[in-house]
Each structure stands twice: as structure tokens, then as C-alpha cells.
Image: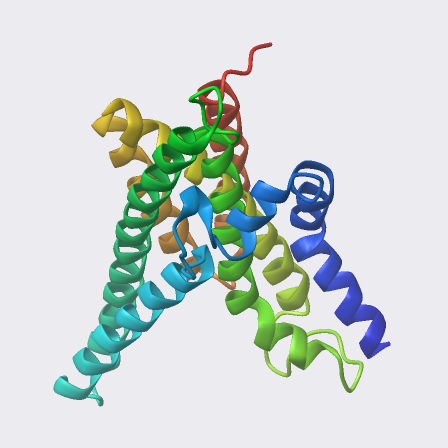
Length: 248
């Protein structure tokens, strides 16, 4: 039963992302490069992938939170909860800062590709880079958010963790799925906002990211966190679709 739970949860969490990779990324070599390595774009040797940028943001946020905890009163439960909220907010802000840094890097790569191409145009558009890098951002974020839960789910075959809700595992998987999709949508909107200097869009992306992160603190009241997060995911997906040039 443990293996069935593990693969079921993994399918919920990463099934949509896997489908997106297989149907929209895998057939295009340049998209695969952006997704995995970002190496050699524009004739410049670069080994900095999206995952690296996200991991650095996570490391810096962890350091800020760790130092804050060490310098505070550990016996004060209310203060520690406040520091956890502070750490989550810092993590979100750093993720968005590194998303901007990756946008600048990809823009330079796009200019390099346009320079060496025969027709003077890049073989991969900035919108495609935004989509693929957002998907990569979401996958690495999802992996780190759910990997320990998946490890616990594989045995000894119980549903839930002792003392917690029996819906803990499945709601965590759905939250991870929403997080992966949100990062994909945020990537499209964020890159377009940076390219066209729509600062209010940047603000909304950061605000929705902060709101989504904050809603997870309502767990284990899953109705209060899961439903609003999926509403945000749906609205953000429609926004990203329109931003990318889609119409109904």
C-alpha cells in the first residue's frame, strides 16, 4: 500500500508538470536547455540553471530565518511563529528577486541568439523562455516542498501521520501541484511585465505569491487554504494565458 500511496501522491503533485514537459518542452532542444541547464545559449558557456537560482534563494532565506531564530527567545512560541511567517515572506521575496535575475540572464542569451542567427531573430522567444523557466522554477520548488512527505508516505502503509489529519498527504500533493502551476504562470506574467515595464503586474505577482505562501499557514484547516489557492491558480492561469497572447 505504501508504494501505491507514494506513486499516487507523486502523480497528483507532478503529473501536470510532467505532461507539460512531455507535450510542450521535450520536442524542442532549446526549451530543454532552458528547463534543465541553460548551457551554451547565445554562444556563451553558462552552467546556471533555473534550479540553481531557486536553490540560492532558498539558501539565503534559510540563513535569514536561522539567524533570526538564534538571536531570538526560543521559549517564546508566539515570537517563533512570527519568525516563521517572516522567513516565509523573505523566501518569497528572494525567489522573485532571483526570478528577475534569471530574466536578465535569459534576455542577454536571447540577444546573443538573435545576433548569431541568419535572419537576426532568436530561435526561441522570450515568452517561451519565460514559460519553460517558470515550469522549471515550479518543479524544483515542488520537489523540495513535498519530497519529505513522499518519503514518509512510502511506508508502513498508513494514511496520514499519527495525530494529524488523514487528508494531510493528499492535500499536500494538491498544494504542490498548485505551486508548480503557479510558478509556471508567474514566470510568464513576470517576464512579460519586466519586458514591457508593467510594474503593477510585478507587484501583483509578488503579492499573489505572498498570499499563497501565507494561506498555507492556515493548515490543517485545508478548506481555508486549498480552495483559495486553487482559485488563485485558476485566475493566474487565465491571466498568463491572456498575457501570452491567448484569446477565447
